[in-house]
Amino acid sequence: MALTVGDTATLNFTVTDGDTAIAMESGDVPVLGTPRLIAWCEAATCEAIAAGLDEGTTTVGFQIRLDHLSPTPVGAAVSVTATVTEVDGRTITYSVDASDNDGDAATGTFTRVLVDRSRFLDRAND
Image 1 (tube, rainbow, N blue to C red):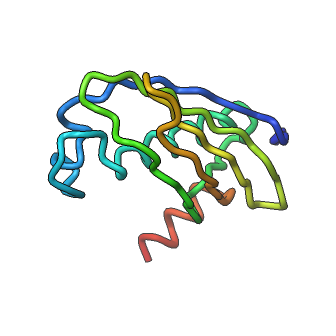
Image 2 (cartoon, rainbow, N blue to C red; image 1 turned 180 degrees about the vertical axis):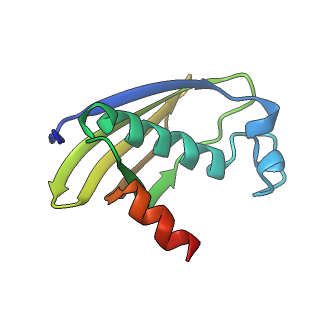
Image 3 (cartoon, one colour; image 1 turned 90 degrees about the vertical axis):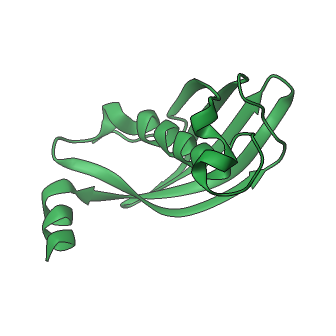
């Protein structure tokens, strides 16, 4: 396994009607919903370390701290970057930044934990 501070990934999205707070049932305005933004950030964290994971190993979300700074309308482009800031045993911490056409949309810190996929699923199914 080769997880390194500085590993990074940037993913790009376009906000659709299905990504809005209305569609996510997290509000009543037609702008990017925070739950979708969180999912996009998590996707970037996974991508940042995908090449460094051993076979049979995955990560699961542990902690999310996100400041959703501004509304992003339907049709806008959103770029999400996740960068590994710390690797401490099985715990991986990332800084996450999202931007849209108007600038900063969100910033935060996400933490994921390395797990053995099979043991994790066995435990979940018990």
